Length: 589
Image (cartoon, rainbow, N blue to C red):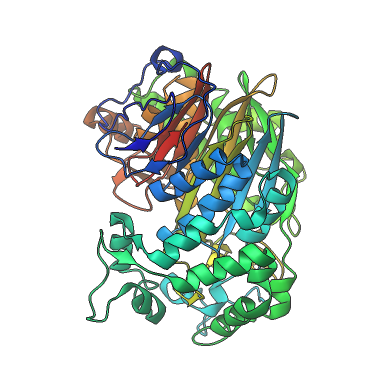
């Protein structure tokens, strides 16, 4: 690992062995570093992590993201005096190039911003939107049954209007320090000169996903001799560089109007399962801005985005766990994992039944009410039992949900020199979105995050049914945690499809209740409990046996893995962590 130069910074070793499942207290293990007012030198180079060098410590700023090139770009923006939001724009531009299987210009995002001066948390919603002509039954086949996901995902009907760039533009206008057109140069240079294929991208290229098998993916990822690009080889994407130039010059209008918009419409309204997308749909896109959803958790304040994001479920699960004795336990205790699993099942059950786009389907006001959360927490016992959604106050009648939600997502956390913070989850939904590519980037398949079946047999509508102009429900749940005085404590988040909620809850419990350092927390095995399906990384045998005896048999190696990134504030700086399951690093200066 070569870091040039992070003045006064140290790296701390990631604990990659799952056998070291219980970390020691945060403050006891915080790395020591002398604060420095010296300005770092000009050159910043972040190389891929070797061995256990995932984590980082730095006195002034910190960036943790899924690719070292993106981290490097974010740090350079911060070094120039940019804000955390400025850096997020630049990091997204690079990730969309080097990690196209996960996010990009054609996708959507949720961003939380912490303002160190006002101590307020603002949520920005860049979720994709269904075109006005979208139909509630568009995912129902000729036989009257929901389409197979593999068929629907590559259809034009799978794509919504992309929102990530418009959302970032809104946030940057309010919290940026640099000019918008200063934020895309490094990504454009990488696209023009070539970027190195990573192992993760190389595996995605040859995956069995239908998007990877499509004509656009083959044209981009396969060489003249018919062989796929492999890890270590370079890809040039001049079309992506040209798209970035338009966006740099014209803002989100460069994407949502003009030639790129025309190409998007042409691509989506042709081929199988054509979309109803129009130029008017693209031009009409508006990101949303709300207050962060901030609720107490013990001595902390946990902030997430509002619906339709996954923050509601994270808040519900954490609220239930606050009624247990999990803080007296640790990661070696099977009972602690049983409690997490039961809280997750209850939170997922309510979320899956009630949550949709609040502009169309307001979720019940009582869903996060303290008395309702306390009642749901009473269902957390010493054995797994059948679980269903509850009935909070003002609960509407909804039909059964039939949402399939695989993942193709990434996450970043950034803290700037003024102490402002960004936690942002960003996605094209599935691997390479819907596999259709225009102007150097893939389009999303975000509308497959709607329920494929719009109603129950009695006609009750699913909360997450398709509708024109509606945002699909999401599991993305970037989090920012404050102390009681609303000072910044930490930021985290993860990709992972519907498992995002589980991954974030695991890391939050590990850091807030078990006082583990961030790298230990993100490295812990994952456990996802939704309905009657319990998936997990391999746990120590004694834990797996104990959980099976409690009705929680774990199925391993299923679903999208986590990509947790976290930053924790220390007395003398910031400690960052990156999930060893992916290629990210945490670095600062």
